[in-house]
Length: 210
Ligand code: HEM
Image 1 (spheres, rainbow, N blue to C red):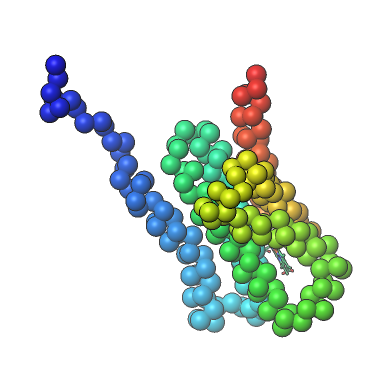
Image 2 (cartoon, rainbow, N blue to C red):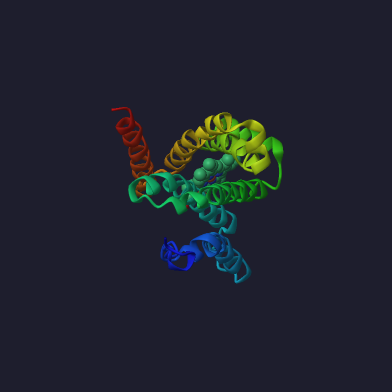
C-alpha cells in the first residue's frame, strides 16, 4: 500500500501561483495606465488646442476598447480553454463602465453642467442619444456587479440582465460611427472585432445544440 509520502503531490500548472494571486492586481494596474497617461498629459499641457475634445475622445476610445476587451474574455476562454481568464471579466467590465462614466463626465464638464443644454444635445444629436442609450444599459450592469447583489438576484436573472452588455457595445460602435464625418476606418475595426466576438459565442451555442 502506498504511504502518504510515496504519493506524488498533484502537479501545479505553471504560473498557478501568479494566476491565483498576482494576475488581478497586475491587470488592475494595467487598466489604470490609460487614465494615468491622460492625467500626465493634462498636468503637462499636452492636450492640444481643445483639451475637452481631446479628453472626451481619448476616454471614449478607451471606453469602447475596454468594453471589447471585457467581451473578449468568454470567447478567449472558449477558444483557448483558459479558465483563469474568466476571473478578470467583472473587473474589465467595471473598468469599461468607469471609462464610459468619466467620458460622459468630461462631456458634462465641457457643457459647464448646463443641464438644459445637455438635454437639448441628447434630443437633437443622434450620436449623443445613442451614447446615452448605451450608458443607460451599462449602468444597471455596474450597479449589480457586487457578490451580494448577484446572490440576491439569483444567477439566472443576473445573467439575463447582463446580456445588455451586447446591445450596449453595439450602440457604442454606432455612437462612434455617427459622430464622425469621414475616416470610418477606426469604428469599422471596432465593429469587425465586435462581430467576431459575437461570432465565436454564436458558434459555441450552435455547436452545443447539434
Ligand atoms: C457605452 C457608451 C459610450 C461609448 C463606448 C462611447 C465611445 C465613444 C467613442 C469611441 C468616441 C470617439 C472617440 C474618437 O474620436 O477617437 C466618442 C466620442 C464622443 N462621445 Fe461617447 N461613448 C459613449 C457614451 C457617450 C455618452 C453617453 C455621451 C454624452 C452624453 C458621449 C459623448 C461623446 C462626445 C461628445 C464625443 C466626441 C464628439 C466630438 O468630438 O465631436 N458618449 N465616444
